[in-house]
Image (cartoon, rainbow, N blue to C red):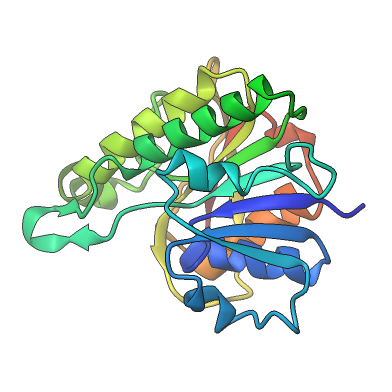
Amino acid sequence: MTKTVAFFGASTGVGLSALKHSLAAGHQCIALCRIPSKLTAIFPAEATPNLKIVQGDAKDVSAVSQCLQDIDGKLVDQIVSTIGGRPVISKMSIDDPEVCRKGIAALFEALAQLRRNGVTGQPHIIICSTTGISRFGRDIPIAMIPLYHVLLKVPHADKRILEESLVTSDEDYTIVRASLLTDGETTTDIRVGIEDPKTGTESKAIGYTISREDAGRWIAENLLLKRDTKYLKKIATITY
């Protein structure tokens, strides 16, 4: 069955990989992008007629709203958000320390406005978060603790707020916590841990890294091309 999927943050990395696999599977995709040429250079219109690109910022409610309806006027089937800030190493921070919380707030407001206007639907929201922020024990190797809890303290604080906003909402969701992201598509097996945000760890997968390309492929294969219900309203940790 063909789905309509909205993408935020898909011009690079995990989101781009998930978008690529979704398009190849024939799904209708709507991607919000501040610089559309980044995507048109990869996905020419004549080769990907199932991709609609909307210019705008994921923190702008109006721009986000333009991505949330399918051709029948209903809410899209699924939403994938992989937005994040660019690292500022000198400050041990990112260029926008509140990008994730602002992005999810904009998404919720856009959905609320559309529903108030009579648009129906219950999209499955998928967000890309990070390991190292679980409330239910260590989910990273001991050697990674200094990196995660010191150098990545600021972006991880933003991810925590993002996760909490989604968990306490009435939306359908899956949170994907990827371990430290690297580059390059591989054939390495991906291990998966599952956490219930209310009751705790169901299974663990502790590892060092996973590539952006493989993380996006996992999202597409397990949450978009098919929808494995064991991840609904759960947190999935993915790592090598």
